[in-house]
Amino acid sequence: MEILDKIPWISGYALVRAEDGSTVAMKGSSTSPLGELVAYFSSASEAIANNLLLGTISYVSLCYGEHRVVIFPHESKYLGVEVEKTRNAVEVIKNIKSSLAAVEKPKFELPRSVSAKVQQINLLVDEFGGQENKEHWVELLNQGLGILGGEILHYIGVVDGKLIVKDRFPEDKTDDFVQGLRSVIDFLVKKGVLEMGSSQARSKVQSVIERMK
Image (cartoon, rainbow, N blue to C red; front, side, top):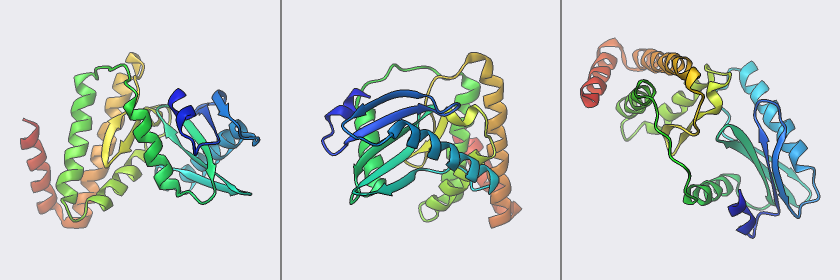
């Protein structure tokens, strides 16, 4: 998180745990209760998304006075940053993610059973969406992830239109991950059948199988 201290247009930030809202880190010159704001609105957004079956919410943007707080998932936590009200929330997130990605992180190897399912999901989105309808299928992927819930959702996410595992997860959760990802695959295939018919959907699925060989 130290990299955020070097971004001049961030007046403050808070990192909270997704499961209980406890503050992991909070820095900056902001006089606002950032830790409480991030914890409250991240929890509220999860509750609203689950109750209304909205799928995964990408971010929350809250304006007050001359400031804006942008809250979004980061690994298995939520990160909230305070910036000037005039700044675009999407651009704020994009710049922060780029800055964080530039900081080298320890690499971890996924179990093959998990990496294969992640690859299959990304190929399904690619096959079903193509070039013209990719955004629609990325949105459907986000909806599919919304059915997972629980701990698993905090470790995975969609970045630049691709499903990724963002953080190392406990080894004893591997079977849960595989089962959860399998349910996302089933969700996408059913959507494919509904939108383009069983014959074309079957052809797309077969193409994915061929690409994975």
